[in-house]
Amino acid sequence: TQARLKVAVTRKLPDPVEARMAELFDATFNFSDEPLSPAALIEAARGCDVLAPTLGDRLDAAFFDAAGDRLRLVANFGAGVDHIDVAAAGARGITVTNTPSVLAEDAADMAMALILAVPRRLVEGVKALEEGRFQGWSPTWMLGRRVRGKKLGIIGLGRVGQAIARRARAFGLSIHYHNRAPINPHVEEELEATYWESLDQMLARMDIVSVNCPHTPATYHLLSRRRLELLQPHAYVVNVSRGEIIDEAALSDMIADGRLAGAGLDVFEREPQPNPKLMAAPNVVLLPHMASATVESRIEMGERVIINIRMFADGHKPPDRVIPGLD
Ligand code: 8YV
Image (cartoon, rainbow, N blue to C red; front, side):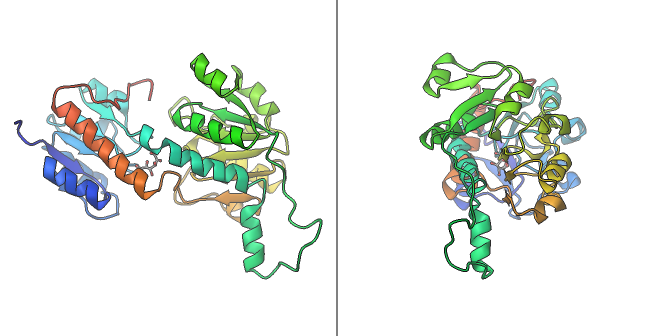
């Protein structure tokens, strides 16, 4: 049996996950739901073999320098690794892993919920009823837009994007996508998905656009003001990925000015604060970064962190390695 790895966990995780980690590793935990300060994060990582961080823990080159030489693995709890400088880790021989597969279906459920909720004005209806504005049925009250038959443009047809596409097909949407490169032709065929090499051209033709790529330097403000202006005024934007991919100020202006039909957003550029114009708009559904927030997903994310750590400890390549440059 190998020496027990020293593992630092930066955030409160589900109890069964913490219990299993305590059994398997020489683990230290931050049992609080508050993120650690940068100094406390360095303190936690120092002298550890493995760090298990989450969103909100900024792991940049300076962090890796300060964390010391013992750190070999960063096993992130979560799919997105935009808070980790993966190249800086790689340059120091530190492996980075994430937990992509286990949360994809739940994230896709929430994206699909937004794709239905925004055009059908679900939250507006709930609020109208709660606020006593329902005066009885009327043929012209609370009319939304039909979802069936519309074109859904997915930016980033990866795990989450494909899971959304399968759901959307059942609701009669046609699937379009833009990616760095066309996906596996079998999957493309299964989804009857149309590849657009030009994001600009795709945007100009879509009824609903769903953002599902990772946030990297290359995708920061991918939906810039110029690109948002390519969208048709009846189009909707949905995002369960990362807020930074959309120029949120531009999106907010366009929604406030009636230049877009609405948006369903689970993520924001400056969490926890969405743009005030979004908060004031009736035709948006805003969620507090909860697309993967199910009991099941959180436990499986924790199990995945454990699998990555154990594989690494056994000298194997952990299954969810994040490759620098492809993060
Ligand atoms: C998590 C997420 O809430 O996985 C992601 O990238 O955004 C969410 O599933 C969060 O990242 C946990 O660290």
